[in-house]
Image 1: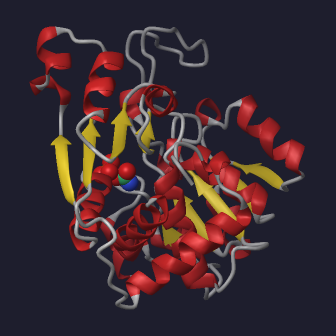
Image 2: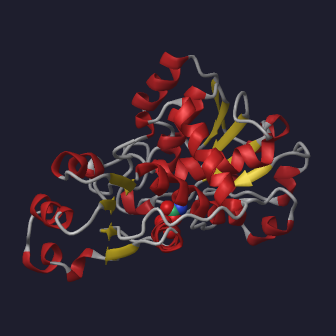
Length: 308
Ligand code: CP
């Protein structure tokens, strides 16, 4: 693995190797494989979990992190330097580059420009592959397998990059997918095409209560409001001047929606959450999103180790 910009970079065996190593880190394995290495951590978009878990992983592996948490204070943000020039310069200062950027395809661009390994920490609405690996780790940890898992995915399926990356993994592990979203936030055709091509079973549902009894995991996402294109009129919205950005009631999880849940159900969420995942769910045995976020540390230690 030279770079990691898309889930398409990984085979099923690659994924299982990463999860196995991540499990070793979780169980106390120590390594200083990044001793004398400098990792550039460049976040052109806000982050809490991804940035800090990568920084923590680099520190635990004996490396040094450089970078920035918002681009306004760089020469790109303050003096109009191009992204291409910025990436070329950073590549000369570090042994690997971690990049988060609001534009789809920014990580692939970085991979083409930089001679050092590039890790995609989320590019626009495109992909967030390291998130998917920690999602898979959490599914495996709670279900004992990835093959054939029944996975509900609820919320913003159109703009959520974590969902788009997760779909590639679903094709490798023959998961059964149940999509629960408002019609305006359904999966895009290109994503459905990938599922069709690989023979993955999927279905659409308006209400999670209709399918909750079939699910091993329920993966929620927030509405990715920062990615909604308000400049393009959506003819399905009656009042074009005031788009409704609130979470529709039937896409907010409630305790009663979990009445028929299987005992093994686990609720996952990449976080941060908004109204779709109320805090009363935190006290149920189904909640697993905080453990999921912590698993990001072990998975990112494994990814960095395998890159080097
Ligand atoms: N899940 C995730 O990417 O969270 P952050 O935006 O806080 O990194």
